[in-house]
Image (tube, rainbow, N blue to C red; front, side, top):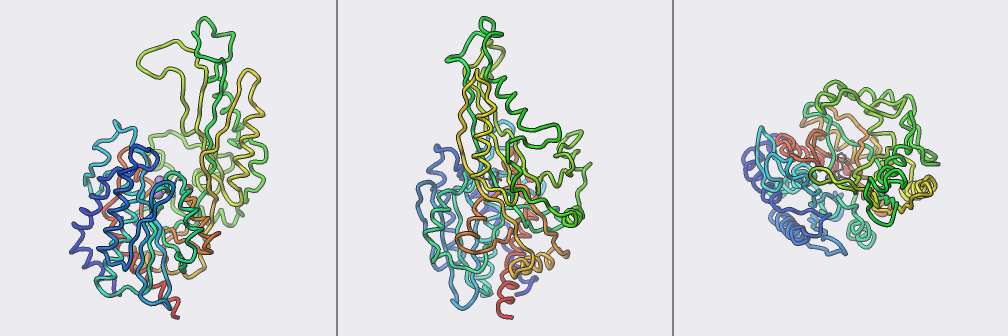
Length: 459
Ligand code: BES
Ligand code: MN
Ligand code: MN
């Protein structure tokens, strides 16, 4: 397998690749909103069809209690290694839609980037694998076996995929899992994500009086649950930005000074970071850099807060209830269930007697760290080195892909987080985009991973 041949194939077919991706991006496969259920299903069918066209022997749609999983495989020789590709075809909701410069499900190419919901997360990245596979089958250069599982519920916690993986352990036998759903540092600075944070996600409800009240007639005599919720949330961190939930840090791994020094070598331009986000200052836990705060340290953040009057103009009301969605990002060796329980107990304990609180668990996932000294990582590093001309930097990421820890636990397989996005792709945000450079770079690099991975098994 030669890089020049891959590049020639990409050059010949790139317009078609982009058109095909755009067709996928036109399907609003929003997993969180039941209104899009049929679109999610239609998207699964298109993904299956594309896998068939790319040359798999078998492609199936596996229904679940939620959205379907697309499974496909090409087994050329059982004695050769097997790469299991994971990706997700579901996307985040597009709102706030009015902040998009073009409609979220009508992809446009502008300045070398494809703008659409799901372009980077994760349709564009998952589709690189389909096209890289197409190259390998059409050129007769597929060096090993391939299995694909492309799911439709990553953005809602992958609960049904977790159940399915436990049932299909035999079918999913492989040697490594390959996933493109993360970022590189920059287009001239390749990196491989070697850590993901876990997640505890809860919704809290604070109830005051039994009904909404006139804020003049009752204000000053009755606690406002919106005010109380804000006070409670504010108390969840101290002046050092330390989370105050009892026992929150009990299992947090303190990263050694040596490892921190090593990580600090990764390029990070704090001024460029601030300029890009239009902020005057960063804010991290006392004693940690912003880069550490967003990778090796746990967090607690309000993701949404509501109730009371939020329409046009003013309405004087003292709401009966207030709500917030709160996510906590976890690091090794915190456990999602344990942290959720600790949060719930803490939140109930700090509730003043003039309100009642409820804590509802939404979803969770475990953190993971991936070693750099096993054949999968070495193959990924070599492949990127060939196509970027630089050795990729191993980097711990701040996002979560909860299923990765489960793959290791249930299938005993390590994952390679072979992402080609950029942190500035605005995933989950308005104007999400994916660079055509990144899309094509992925298609170019993936076949070389297969080659190096297979070679390492023979040698
Ligand atoms: N692809 C992202 C995760 C990601 C993005 C990791 C960039 C590293 C860098 C994934 O689709 C995602 O958004 N995960 C969710 C968790 C899920 C349970 C909703 C997240 O991290 O918020
Ligand atoms: Mn994703
Ligand atoms: Mn996502």
